[in-house]
Length: 580
Image (cartoon, rainbow, N blue to C red):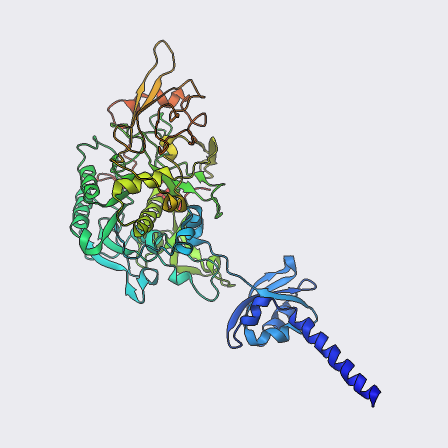
C-alpha cells in the first residue's frame, strides 16, 4: 500500500512538473488573455519551423502572419484557448505576445516627437480648427470621430461642382494634419498612419481643381472666409501647401497681404516653401527659390526633410528639392523651419486624379497589415514635397494651441523656431537615379531655417515672448578687388532674433548667427545653433550671384502652383517619387 501511495504521489509530482513546464512556455502577459479572444503571438521553435508546423499551429483556427525562420519562429493570430495546446507541442520552445510596433505617418510623427504629445500629455488637437486651403477633402473614416465627420465646413472656390477632392492633394495633406489612422487600425495592422493632430476639426476650402490648378483670387477668397469663420469653428491655423513664383515684393503681393490679414486675426499661417531647391537654371544652386506666400516674413514657411525610412531623427537629411532662401526681391531669411515631407504615406482621395494617374504610389496592404496578399490599399497613398512638410507643422500648431490656447501666432512661431532640433551634418548629397545627377545640400539658415521641428521641446518650453516674429532680412555686399563679400542679417523687431549679424564669406570660422550678434539667450540664432563653420558662406558661386541680390526674380516658370503655367515635369516627378 505504501509503495502504491508513493507511486501515486510520484506520478502527481511528475504531472505537476510537466504542467509547470508547459506553462513556462507561455509569456506572463498571455495569462491575461481572455479564452475567447484572438491574440497575436510569436512562437519560437527548437528548430526552424516547416510548413507542416505552421499548419499545425493554426489547425484549431487562426492565420499565419509571418514566417520568422531566421529566429526559428512563426507569427500567428490564434484563439487564446489554443495557446496551452500549442505549448504542449514538444517542438515549441516559447510563446510570447507579438507586440505591435507603430510607425505613425510612416516615421514622420516619430521624427518630430509627436507621440510625446499624444501619450504623455494627452494632446490630440481636439477643439482646434485648421483650415486646409487646397484641392478639397473627401470624407473618409480617418477623418471621422464617433462616425461624425471632423470636416466641419466645406466650400468650393473653384469652378468645379463640389468641394470634394478630385485631385488627391488636399486629402493627403489633411491626413497628415488630422488623420486618426482608423483604416490602418485593425487586428492584423502593424502600422498606423496617424496624423499629427488626430482629433482636430478641418475646414475644407477648395481652391485647386482636379489638375491641381488654381488662382490667387481663389486662395485669397478662401483666406477671407477662414477669417470670417474663425470664431465659429475656432480656426487657429491655415495650411497652404501651394504657392506661385515671387513676382513682386511681399509688401505688394495680394496673396501675401491676405496671409498677413489672417495672421493679424489670430490665425497661424503655415506655408510650404516650394520644391525648386534643385533649380540651378540661374547658377544659384537652388537658393532664392522660396515661393509666394512663403516669402512673407510673418508666416511660418516650411522646408522638407527625409526620414530615411526610420523613426529616429538623427539620420534624417534635407530633401535636395526643398526650396531655399533668401526670398527673391525682399531677401527674407526663409524657410523658418523644416519637417518631414519626403515619401510620406497619408490618405488617398477616392476620386483623385493623382491616384488614378500614379497607381504605383498606392500603398501595398502588406506594408501595414500582416497579410500574404499583394493587393494595394484603397485608403493610403504616398506623396512627397514641402506640401507634405507644411501640414506636419500645422498639426504641431494645433497641439501647441490645445495646450496653450492663449498663445498668439507670433508666440507660436517663436516657440516652434526656438525649440528646433539642430544636429545636422555639414552637408549631404543625393543622387537622382533617373538622371545620374548629384545634388549637394548644405545645412545653412537658407536651407533648414531655424532647424527641425521638435514638438516635445516646443510643448515643454517656458519662455515668454513679446513683439512680432517676422523673419529677418538678409543683405549682401560684394567685396572689392576680388575680396570676399559680406552677408548681413537684420533681425529688426523680431523677439527671437535681435541685432544685426554679419559674416565675411571667406571667414568660415565666423558664424552668421554668432553670440556676439545675438544678445538674447532666447534667440533662435544663438551660439547653440549649427550655423557656424557648417555653412556655405564661402561659396562664391552662390553669394556673388547677383540674381539673388538684385531686384529681379530668380524663379523660372517651372513652379508647382503657377497662375500661368502648369506643373513642370520635374516638379510633378518630385511630388510623385520624392527622393531616396
